[in-house]
Image 1: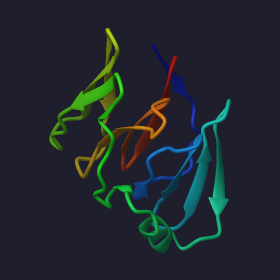
Image 2: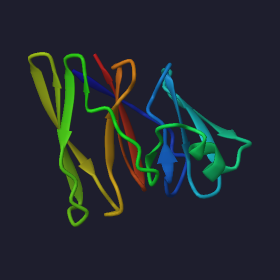
Image 3: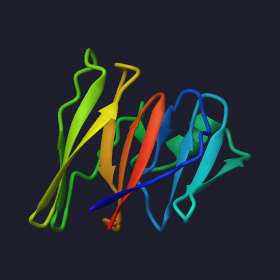
Image 4: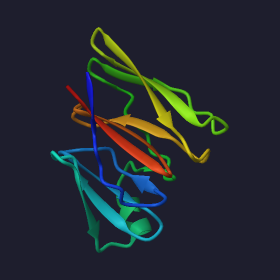
Length: 137
């Protein structure tokens, strides 16, 4: 049901990111801004932008900027409960009659976000030290 995409490592500590749209998303850490293409294989490009101003230019950024993730889109749904004291988040992903559980490792108790992409093709899970993307098969 879900295929994990191998996003190259690009930051030591993620600050914020956008909801995937059009096969890409944008992210930043405290020093740089990035464009992440969800192609096969995914690629990361460093942008010549001020990271905080860049991520603030998006209407609904996630991470430290507390935007609103997409948890339900059509027949797809994600459910999770984040407790900063735990070292993982269990994410239940439902697509039609199919259901799958993912265990996402959390290294920081600061924040965790799970979101579907605007097109419903991707699931993105992130916390400050880890970002994972899955494609619905």
